Image 1 (cartoon, rainbow, N blue to C red):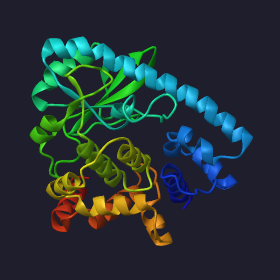
Image 2 (cartoon, rainbow, N blue to C red; image 1 turned 180 degrees about the vertical axis):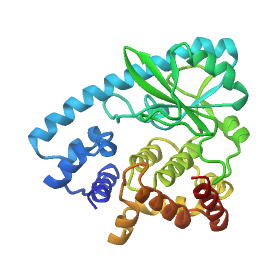
Image 3 (cartoon, rainbow, N blue to C red; image 1 turned 90 degrees about the horizontal axis):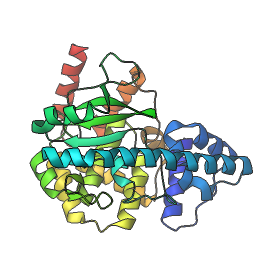
Length: 312
């Protein structure tokens, strides 16, 4: 339950409440867990061990350098996007650099996440193909599926770009892509109408879907949502409308309950706070459990997983 306890303490700290410092065991867990390491600069004020603080300072430098490299890559796309009249939407942490986060308040990102319109797929592939190569589905490092594909960018040192054609699995959730693009806004850092980010409310919904797909709620995306709430005005009525139309009202309620950090039971932390190894059988069971308890309509979810396991 270390993950859930660490996230709860960080939520309290960000909310300005009297947060406890992390225990020695929690500090060690946070600095060895790949997911929580992304948040290590934010955890700095909850850590007492001098050796761990030194490690965080070093991680912060590395994170800022990596983020700078990824920002430069996105900037290098700008002239091609304008020439080809392509709009892209930056997703998740890719969108939050120089928007919610900055060099002093930062977090790490694994990949660059970009959403494009399906009609622009061929043109965008020609552009990104000049920077790297598409990763084969059989590649053990990464995988692709029918609503996103992965590219490896080789520029000094390599990193991955996930090119999305939807923000989540369209068989499980209802995303109005026309509305999503219409409601998007130019990203303030890039000063280019072709490089955009989701509306504040769509960003929150996407992060909730990301947690559901990953199978646990005590997640770095929970902290992203909290910082968006603090940095930007959010329309609660619009969140309610979107969560209803997308089919994630239950997951949205659970997310905002956890963010209040009040009366969260040990059982809730245990059920929704465990990160399980990707691609394992236990992970599949966890994902099924999360979908069945957090998706608004159970029957379509059951049918989806029946078809999924038959194909397997």
